[in-house]
Length: 396
Ligand SMILES: Nc1ncnc2c1ncn2[C@@H]1O[C@H](COP(=O)(O)OP(=O)(O)OP(=O)(O)O)[C@@H](O)[C@H]1O
Ligand SMILES: [Mg+2]
Image 1 (tube, rainbow, N blue to C red):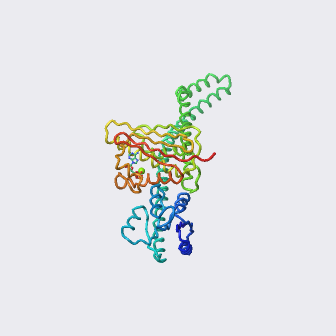
Image 2: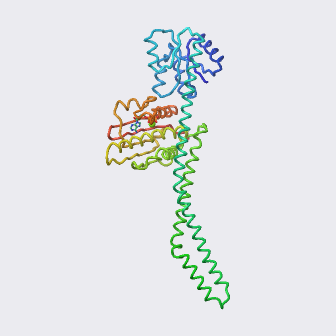
Image 3: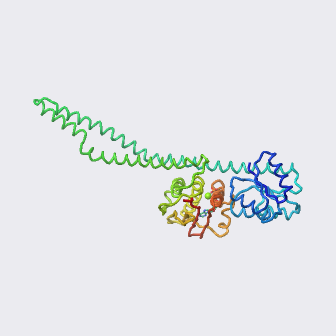
C-alpha cells in the first residue's frame, strides 16, 4: 500500500520511514501539513496517511477535516503526545480514523496500520462490488431491451419466409408459361392465374415492404444497443479513459432509466461539440448513474404520493470554459434542509433498509473532487431538486 507520512521532526521522520518501509509499504514522505494535504489531494491512489499532530502550515486534525470536507477518503492515523480524552475525541471528530500516542510503540503502530489496511481493502472491495452490480443490472436491462426488437425481427422473417414460398410458386408458374409450347399457352396462363390467386399477390405486395422496413429498424435498434454496451466495456478494465461527457450521459441514462418509462418524460439538452473531460469515463458514468437513479427514485415517489403528478427529469450539459457543467433537474419529492445537509455523508439514506445504501452521493462527490470539479444541489420539498456536477475539461 502507498502510505503518506507527514512529520516535521527529521529524526522521527526517518524512524517512521524505516519502520513503514520494513513492513513492505511504499512511503511518500512530507515535512509539513501543507505539503501533506497538497500531495494527498493530488495523488488519489494514496489510501492511508500517518500524520503528526503538531506541524507547520497545517496541524494533523486540520488536514483530516479538510480532507473530509473535500470528499477525499484517506485512512488517517494521527500521532500525538496528547493523551487527554478531550483531545483524542476532538481529533476523531475532525475526521481522523485512528490515533497513536507518542512516543510511538512500533508494535502498536503496526497493528493500527494493519487494522486500517483491512478497512481500506474492504472499502475497495465494496467499490468493486458496486461496479459489478452495475454491470449485472446493465446486462439484465439490456438483454430485456434487445428482446423486443428481436421478437418482431423473428415474426417478420417468418412472414417473409412464407411469402417467399408463395411467390416462388407464382414465379415457377410464370417461368412455365414463358417456356411452354404455344399449343399449351391457355392452360399455362390458367395455372399461373391460379397460383397468383392462391398467393394473394395484392396482400403480399402491400405487406412485404412494411415487414422489410420494420425488420431493418429492429436490426438498427439492436445495433444501437450493442454500441452502447461497447461503451460500458471500459467500466471493468480499470484503465482511465477521459470522458466524452455526452456519451457518458447517454450511457448512464440507458441504465438508470431502464425501469423508469411509466413515470413521465426525460428531456435532454446536450451541448454540441463538448470537449472531453479529464474525469475518467468509467467514474463519470458511474457518478451519473447515481445522480440519475436518485432523480428517478425521487420522481417515482412523488408520483406515488401525489395523484395525477407527471414526472419530468431534465438532463443538460454545457461548456463553461474551464469546466463542463452537467445539470440534472427533477420534479420529484425535493428535500428538506436537514436531509439536504447530510446527503453527501457516507451511509446517509432516507430509503428503506435494503433499497438504499447511502453510498451514491458520497461517491459522486469523491469523483468530482478527485478530478478537480464540484457538485452542488438546490432543492425544495414538493417542487424538486437540481444537482449540478462540474468536471474540468481536458486541455486542448
Ligand atoms: N434527486 C433527489 N431528490 C430527492 N432526494 C434525493 C435526491 N438525490 C438524493 N436524495 C436524498 O439523498 C439521500 C442519499 O442519496 P445517495 O445516493 O447517497 O444514497 P441512496 O440513494 O439512499 O442509496 P444508494 O445510492 O447507495 O443506493 C437519498 O436517500 C435521498 O434521501
Ligand atoms: Mg442513490
